[in-house]
Image (cartoon, helix red, strand yellow):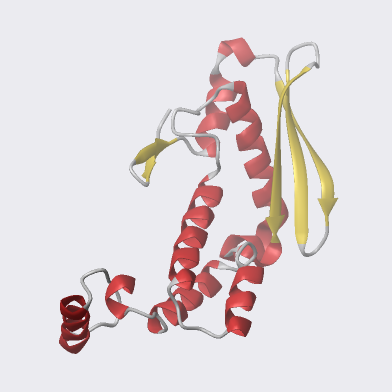
Length: 184
């Protein structure tokens, strides 16, 4: 199966997992069944099942998607949710799991959320802004996440540690603090 590299690991996409499942003779009479558990204009929860030739459920995968969570979800949150659920069910069957079970969207979102949490920990934002970011962390769109990252980088307690927006004067101040108190 073809893979793509994400964070230094090879990842098998859902379409490759499905293609493998459909092409392998051992799964010839097997099927994929999906069920909408909850769905409306804002969110979706879908269950996918892999059934053997007798109709016995062999593996199951669930997914949850929020319409506002990403650009693709704005128009296709149900479809994206179904794809993720199928990918997870196939992964639990053992197909394409060398790099992990999580979907590509889950990996990207978790990575972005982790970066935001790190920036938030060293930011000088108000308690109100901090709470707002924390409350929206799991549902923000990619565009929102980019804006939050820029905002947090611009409001770091230490611009050098944030890796953004520092100049020679900031470096000199940091060096002066180190000279006075080597623990910092």
